[in-house]
Image (cartoon, rainbow, N blue to C red; front, top):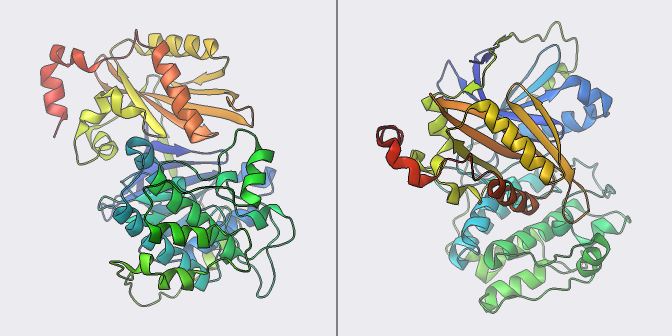
Length: 442
């Protein structure tokens, strides 16, 4: 069994993984509060010259304190790592919901859009421009409230100066960002908000091509059409937002005055502005000995043991049946299946399946990483797997997208499962272990 502590935080399983960081579930042992801890390697940060970017991301997240923005609690440092302690948001990504049910009703889409605009407006008033707004960076809490996350590409420009860095996700990026002529961060964020509104109401992207030149051509002239189910008010607002000319594009103030937007609009209320101290942001990169945070790790040779508390945090509404229903797994960027085969047999089966899909396999301590080229040939694709023992002779295999397009990941996961039918525990087998299933379903 693996146990790990970081000061007052008890670390659990990995719940997210990117190119330069991992996100772990953790619990504040003093307050009992659940948090998410973003773990970054100092060596990696220095190697890729990311010190300024990480400092900026931490600084921005300390500055923006809003009910619709993921909250940063504190920043810690060890000899080798930086730990960003964040609010733990349990409802998953808005993207997952769209993939699961398709388009969202207009009234509910408007509610999400109102919360998004409130959060983005607050950021802009603080001089912060997100620059990577998309459904995958919009989380939902247990009450369905929207939370903006991932400020890794955000900017704090000097007053009066244009931004010049081309960044963001291609399908959501504004045309002026592609022009390399400089752009206003506020107007570029508004464009991304318009694409998000279109996606959640339509269930698909307004600009979507298999190759980037064709995609950019459509974005530059705003070549898209609205579905017939869009109301006239929604269509009119989207056309004002997805205006390729940033000078005549509607502003956030204009959006807030729009009749469609104002329907059932309740401006978010939040307390007095908190005084923000950024001294600790630089401190995490200073003398590591002075900032050392104790990390204690105990290693075992078998798969990680997952306790019942961690399993409950994976489920929605405290119903653990989703962990054993493969039909629900296709909708998430973090997916999982269950097997009753021995752990070593599971690894061999996954390695064989990955080989048939022409993926490179890296395996160590019951953790695996599969890497290959995306189906659209635009970029690389990587998947991380971990094997957990949840009961004697019962293992859960957690699969996460490490990099690449999320829709490509869904296709990969379906292909992988089709090649692992012989080891996946199917729901029809539940009758063989009725006591276990009953005890795990709250």
